[in-house]
Image 1 (cartoon, rainbow, N blue to C red):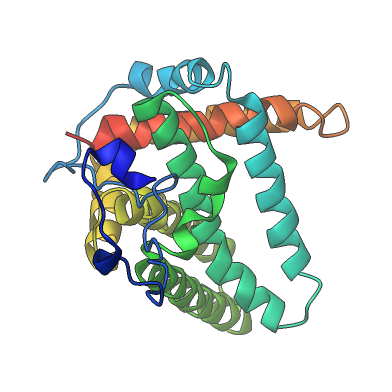
Image 2: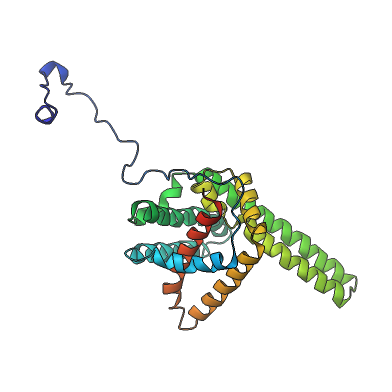
Length: 261
């Protein structure tokens, strides 16, 4: 019947009854995320900008609460289920978590650019930018083990050597600085790799640079969100069902404001 729609007559000689159906290699309903243009130098923001992310994240959600909440709940269930499996489960959790986080980022990207949301986007990174995201997870594990070895060794050496309280306080403060450095070294790497098409090393460098350019706003935002999460946990964790989608939206907004042209 194609000839009736195309306006061209199809002869018998043009028809090959043995021709195999042509498979569609690209899913038109869920194409790979189009790379965003990332600033060469992260944008400097104010404390007010950082606190505004929460309200902006909330504004993105009307009409999409179910998809976002469902994606977050499934992410928690999947990553928690890995913990049941000894050793291999921990490795699988480390590798799968950034892939799922990238899916949540894509959900918000679609909401912003297309005005709709698709739960299937949660698994987009299992077929798009998978390798770089897994390499990032391995880099994260490596840095974590290195910091643990360094500070664990220092603590043991000072304790065995009878170091005074002052030395232990200094080590504790250095550990706190290292913790913030670790968090923000990887904080924005998932969207930078998945949506910005950056390599692992460049994404880590940009993520840390985004923090160092905005130390005070980022720390204030982190402290405020920690308070919000703790308060939301009081009524049997039910408040998290409302708060976590908002904070997920705030995270996407923060990435856009700091890094995207």
